[in-house]
Length: 251
Length: 339
Image (tube, rainbow over all chains, first blue to last red):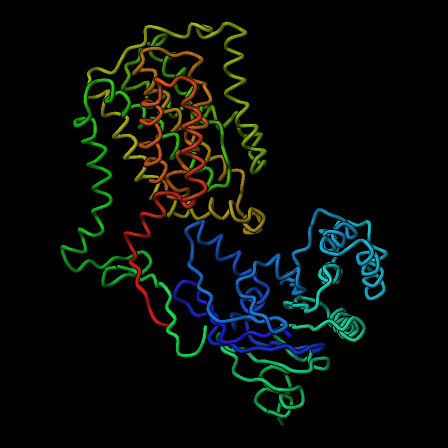
C-alpha cells in the first residue's frame, strides 16, 4: 500500500537515511525500530512529506540543505512530488513525535481541526469512534490541550490523526515517556483501530517489546540503514535482535 | 528514478584552513591568514575609506548618519537575536542619549569629548531603569511596549514644554573639527561591533543566549534571568544613546524628532536585509538602506513604497539575509557529487 524504495535523505553532507526500502501492505501493522538517530523520524517525515516542508524552510533560512532521493509509492502511484497536505488528502496521515497537539485549543477543538478534510458526516462518525476507542477523551473534551497529561495528549494526537480519515497512519514514537499501563492502553487501541477501521499502521519505537505483540512485520534501522526485516516470528527467533531490541537476555 | 541512472546532489564543502577546531586556529601560511583577515579588513578599511571616496559633504554626512543607524541596528540585532528581546525602542535610546548630551553640553558646559561617553553611560542606565518593569515580557509584547517609550517621551516633552519643548535645545557645540565629526561614529561603530562579537562568545553571552532559548532552564541553573536581561539592555541602550549623543553634536541641535520612529524601524529593516544574528549584517543593511533612502528623497513620501518593495523582495527571495548568504559562500564551496 505504502512503500518506500531506495530512500536516501541527506542533511547537508550527513546521510540520515541510506537506501531504505520499506513497505506496508493493506491492513498491516508495520514496526520500525531503531535507536536514537537511527533515522526513524526522518523516515516518517519523508513518507508523510513533511520533510519537503522542512527542506523548504531550511533553504529559506539559509540552513542545512536537505536532499531527498528515492521514491515513495502509495497504492501503486509515485507520490514523492506531492506536498504533505496533498498526501494527507490521499490518506497518509502522520501522528508526529512528541504529539504536537494544539496546546491552546480544547480537546474537542483539536479533534475538529484534525477533521478538516472529512465531510461533516464522516467527522461526526469518526468523533464518536475516537471517543469509543479513547473514552478518557470524551470526559476531557472541554479541557485545554496543553494541560493534559502525556498519555492523554498522545491519545488526543492519535485521535486527531484519525479524524483526517487516514488509509495509512504513521505513528512516530507514540509510547515515548509513558507509563507501562498507558503504553498497554495505547498498544491495545492501535490494534483495535487496525482491526475495526482497516487502517494500515506504521509505528516507530526505540524499544520494540511493548508493540511487538501487535506488529505483523518489522524493520530495524541502524544509522540510517534498514539492517534487518522480517515477520514478528522471524525476528523474535533471532537471539541478537531479542537482546538488542526486545530486552530479552539470553541465558 | 530507475536503476543505473546517475543521481547527483550538490554538496557543500568547507573551504576551511588546515587545522581548525571550534575556537582555535592554527595558521600555517600567509594565505590562510589572509583568508581569515580579508573579510575583516574589507569592513574596517572600507568604512574608514568610504568618507574619502564619496563626492562632497552631503554624502559624507550620509555616511555619518549611516554609522549612527548602524549602531542602532547592531544594538537591535544583539537584543533580538542574542537575548530574545525584540526592541522597538531604538528611537527612545537615541532621544535619551541626545537630550542627555544636549543638557550636559548646554547646562553644564561639558565638551563633546565628555558629553558623548557620559550620555552613553547615563542614558544606558536611565533606559535600563525605565525598561526594567517590562523585562519579564517577551516577543511582541516587549516590542509594543518598547515602541511606546519614544512616543510617550516626545509627547511629554511637547505637552509639558520642558527641555525646549517643540523647538528643542539649540546652541549645542559641534565636534571640534570635521575629521572628528566624520570619524567618531565610524570608529565607535567598528569598536563596538568587534567588541560585541567578543561579548557574545563570553560566559555572559552564553547565558543571555540561553535566556533566549529557554529562560526556565536558565532559572533552574540558579541564574538570575532579570539581572542578565538588564545588563544586556544596558549594553544595547548605551549603544543607542551613544548614537544619539553623536547625532546632537553633529546637528548642534536636539529636538523631539530624535524620538522619531525611523530610529526604531530602519534598524529592523537593516537587520532583515543584512542577516539577523550576524551583528555585521545589520551594518551592511544600513549601508544599503540609508543611502537608498537618501537617494529616494526627491520622491517624497513615495519613497516609503520603494523602500517597502526592497524589503519585501529581500524577505521573499533572500530571507536568510545577505551576511548569512555571503558567509556561506565565502567559507564553503559547492560541487556535484554522485550518490
